Amino acid sequence: MKLRIRVHQGRLGADQFRVIRPARPVTGAVLGDHNPWFFLELNADAAFTVTGLWMLAARSRHTLIHLPLRGNTPPTPSLTTVNTGELDMVLSHRDLQFAPHRWKDLRRRLDAGAPQTVSWNPHDVPTWDEVHELNRHAHRRSSHRDRFHQHLHGHTLFMAGNAAAFRRTARYVLDMALWRPDPDRPGYHSATVHPADGHFATDCQGMYLMRWQ
Image (tube, rainbow, N blue to C red):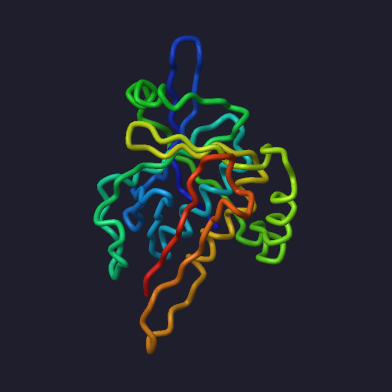
């Protein structure tokens, strides 16, 4: 699949940063903080875009991926758990060790960005059987290397993880995109990125994903 993005550059002191954003606003998604869960509600188009960015984060060790979602209205129809987009999201590799308190200054210093198109293959996303096995493996390990670290700063949720963390959770988002609703049985589809499955470091919140018919 093709994913249109804009690649921005910005400097903070001696540090140069690369920031990727979707080329078009992801209007079909909202993100809210309902402690102890983050709620991500999206439609099919937004779910495909977010999955592509999720997989891009898995292979982009030196890049911040910014999803501006704040102020979005929920997709229609909606579960209305989130009345309006409360949070943006930034995905990054843990090796980058970006400090969230620097984000506001970096965001102001970003250039206009250059358009690019990248490719990603849904078949590269682990299957549910692979995800369940990875979850069992991560749950047994005492190391937090393959787990997300979260920070909430400046109305932005920062998700920092390694390639393994992004790849095994991409299936949850892709599942929202692939779901085919039954027109005779209106309802919604959901997936839970649960802390009990070893997705997160200590004291992080889980993520509940929802897609309405």
